[in-house]
Image 1 (tube, rainbow, N blue to C red):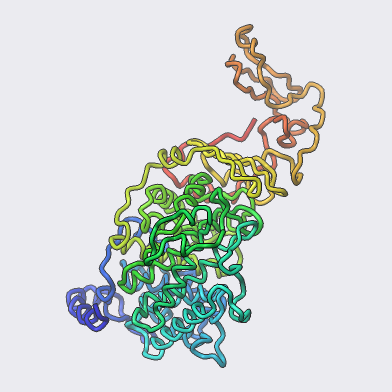
Image 2: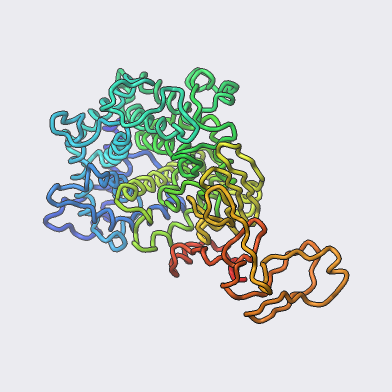
Length: 604
């Protein structure tokens, strides 16, 4: 349907909903009046329960977004990415029931700030103003910000002036044209800021999954919004090529007969960005959130086609090895629905940035495991956002870049649910018990990733053999908040990179931790076990089978056996274990799931 016809349809629907619009508070004299409702000018859709959750999160995050408003510039920050939060604003203004009390700002003011920010960002883009532009025309990572702003602009299209609309199309043609012209071997470093190693990719230490994904975003946007452009075919060609190489694994791709745009995957894909165990490394080691990029980038791309009312290309719906990549992430899955980070953990607990890969897998591919993981994460996001600084979607990270990008990504998750009927529809998630049952297995991921992982129905444990990260993380009840297991934190090992020092000799008479009963013990005597303890009260233990390990009764922290775990396994009392963050609200975050009915004791 043409934009003109859609506007005529919107005018007819507006007459029906005008009484509701009149019931809103009157705008102040300084504010721009809101436009008449124009949701009907966008493709039809509907909210489901999770869409309503995400809408509420956007409302609660709006106070932070408004804190980035710069009255002198007349916009949110542009060079620092604050402006990408306008995608969240646009969702609030075009969908749902806006609540100014929760948002902390009137709808009229938010509308004014959103439109002015989009207009300012477009005007200052280097494609629009090559002489004095301040941002854009740079692949890593300003092209990513361009794609968010353009999605926001198309949601707010009816409220933008002609110059801004023309500027949006100029940015699309400029960035997509450059990406198609540059191909796999760009020659202008002033336009890049990173590399994919051509179509070869990379998988040891630094996967090129993310770099290839970043090149798809403006190609997808240009393809979605400018389908009649003479260069559209070139944009599609490189969109398909970069997307299908993003999860590249030659041994799998060369045997993949799936046809995308008339050619089998084996003709599109040549890169290797993952190991043959379907793991990846970034920043020198395995990182679950970076591996989620395999779904993050197509999620960001699909939303443009939904906004434009156009079919989603096959390359964005059916990615090679994507199922296997997420099967690995499920094996590292926590009770928050996201993988834990046993090695490099620079993005641990970035819940607001972990959402759209799960939403993509659920809403686009119809994965019931991802649907459960998304529900688990959505259940955590409420108390997580309430935790100080309240309202923020990303904690424990300075600056605003990740925060406003998280706002844009939560908006994308909303839109994937809103237009789910054009994707996989309503997906029935597996139960939480079935999620962990299906993910339960022991896997050796190879000597370079250096991970042997054991997922089970009740807990998760790994043997990390990567140099500088050697340890044995244990997550009872799949809880990655109980102990700090990321980065180089020692888990069941002293803080020694790659080795374990000799165990110190225990103080005479002091219990030495875990002891195994002789096989003959249970049959030989029914008397309680009372290990010696010179400083604490004795406690008794009833007889137990020979395979049972018994805690000693020593309660003193001065005993050498309590100074940490060693290879022979002393007492499980761990003075160094930290609960993070150490507040009552953090416990609410950990216990947000209704199934969290009991906690592991940490005392001896």
